[in-house]
Amino acid sequence: MAADVLRDVLVPEVLFGAAPADLPREDGCLRGDLMIEDGRVAGMRRGETGTPRVVMPALVEAHCHLDKCHTIHRMQGIGGNLREAIEAQVEDKALWTEDDLRARIGRGMDEAIAAGCGLLRTHVDWLEGLDLPPAWHVIAEAAGDRPGLKVDRSALIGVDILAEPGAADRVARDIAATGGTLGAFVLDHDGREAGMRAVLEAGATYGLTLDFHMDEGLEDGLDGLGLLAELMIGMGYQGPVLCGHCCSLMNVEGDALDRLLEKVAQAGIFVAALPTTNLYLQGRGAGTPDRRGLTRLRELDAAGVPIVVASDNVADAFCPTGFHDPMGALNLAVLTGHLDPPFARWLPSVTTNAARALGRAPVLVNGAAVGDLRISAARDLPGLVSGRLGPLATVAAAEMEHRSI
Ligand SMILES: [Zn+2]
Image (cartoon, rainbow, N blue to C red; front, side, top):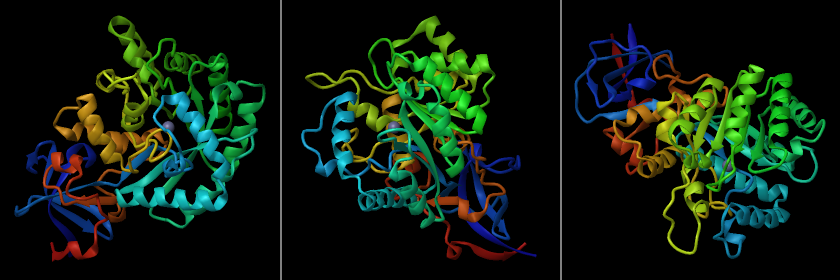
């Protein structure tokens, strides 16, 4: 019998699945030869060692904004807080023709593919009224041209609009008909509780995945995450529900934080940290910032809340730099959020946790199709996370050795 073999690889154990006990372990990784039969991983064996490379599932970009990306070059005087960024981006929307959207969305998707992504969720701004915006179908067309990247679209609408009678149901019906996720922007809106309830009810009616831009600020009074958790527990809501940002968790500590995180864990909410945009927009004053805009990643993780890390805005009013690369976002989260080694424990935030947050089955290396894997020239996880040895690539047939077993 013959099999293809990918020699001397490191696979983060948390991303492998069931593994033989006798395989060598190094820094949270299994080390050995990956056995491939009929295009799928059929186990791992001890092998000769040389210079290893890291193999893992394709990355998941769980939160970005392809309709906004790569607009920074046509904006003036950027450098404000979240509300100023929203105003600047509103002005730019006058330029969002279908051709403009197609070019920028395609560029964003190609960046994600080059970074090793196999699945991506982009938020899509709703424009006037409740109708699907033009970017909704432009994204579907661009995704159709790139079969290696699965793309999920999530509505981004003010929660106060969705609180109006019938609005959430109307939007959810269109999303269910075209495929996608129902989402809302939740800040200090008066109608936030009613709006989140309407989103949950519409999500349950149409069987949709949900995604909230939640509490994106360090000011007092942003309490949406706790309200959502209570609503979900009260309704017995079954997810998946992903909340991005949750910056205002930084204002809660001690027993109050413990009680809040317990509720979030009980509700089954996933929380996404979005370091680039949060570092750029939050904690702004006249001088150099002395507060970080990140959410409480370490406390959430310790409380059993699955955490996700993603790229968010790229070269737009909300973040003037960046690229669509979840591993780059994780590298930033490591440094700014003190996500200490061993790094294997944080890799689910850009792979398996992120997939489950999007309502997709997570890919584990054992049993995966070769096309769903990525390989890095990095010889260890610090090298992988730093990204300095180049992006994660698909596994080329030439890299495998055909061998009798
Ligand atoms: Zn966002």
